[in-house]
Length: 592
Image (cartoon, rainbow, N blue to C red; front, side, top):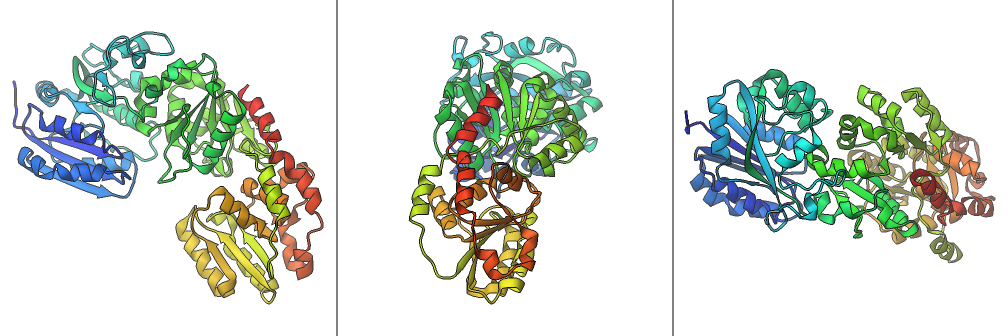
């Protein structure tokens, strides 16, 4: 039976694909199946994606029975998909990313199967690969080589049986629950019976496996089918790892899993400058609108969560790697990938970042990951104790952490030319984080030294912006013009110049945080007050430096608060953390 009057909802979550989304939309317009509604949400693209979408408004209104084009601030792929699914009115739902292409017969073929097979909730066809220009990648292209086995393939349908010999792709129901537990092998371009969503929740934000989580839920309620026919073109372009020919790297290299941040940029710059860049590969997930990594590197690959979850090439790179370095355990995308591919855990090292360990919830996923990882790296004894308490593992302490950059020469010049200023400048914290207790410290300073000639500076240009506004309000009320909030992002030179003007700095956090800022301040001759048990304090004290106890401020005079008799001692103690001596030692230990 070929029924063609059922409505199909085509949903497209769009993000930064100005070069490709026109082709995606055109492929839906060209479908042989006619009864379609088109739903697109632009998820806060920073390029011209939204303009391109809008340019198709009239043509789409003439072609489809219903059209919804919306734009929003960036919420992420899965929240956007949930919104699209709630908007969908069709009997069937077809999901396509904003850089891929549906073959003209795709919807008709998939629809006819589901109409004639009531026991199935999902059907997918084979995927071919195309490049950024839309050219089909054929046998012999280096992109189409499974770097872990050397097998050359033409379509996903050729690759998957090699990668998942346990799955019979041509069986009546090729992906059953027990198979999906080992990983998602369902090709892109699938059609789903919308009624299945009455029995399951949509894409959940905290789902351990996200795409695979949805497939697991569907497989518990119904059957899934693979059709051995190419119905979808999966585009490999600048955001796909294979475009930079990772397979050309040596057989032994370290993969670093990171998110876009200034700290990640520092690590990349340092490793590429210090070691052989051909021995390191960096995968970077986006973080809000952060653009911490601005330099171009041939071994840096900007990826998305869909690629981590579904691209077989990503797994191939991980299998080939000598070591996997998880730079902070903040992102479920990396965690869920390692959960599915547990065989990678023995060669995985978790490098703890700042509040990474302190804020990590103790859930089943993290416990299983951490207890089976090859190594955990922390920066202080407090973190080592916390790792034992939370996860029952013994972590290795590398004093100072692994993210230092060489600033010593630049800082020497700043120190020698230190500017004279009236009064006394006090830095409070380094970011808009509630853990820094800004308001408590501001009230303390006002109570103890409010009548002295002091100026307060608070860097609040990243972190919790709602909290930042509260800090600014209190600061202005207490100190008036003597309070300055740093609201704009500073480059490294501007930041070091600001720090060079500080006489005293106060860091109230109780965990390892702000060590990068503290080491610069110490080398520039600033007196630092901190919680004595904080990880950053321990690192400095272990190196022979002097940090003052924040709890003594209420009991000392202003002259005692300001005078700094340990400038030279601290400069000598902290210098190895600024000239790359410690960083080189740490990363040699971690990666080699």
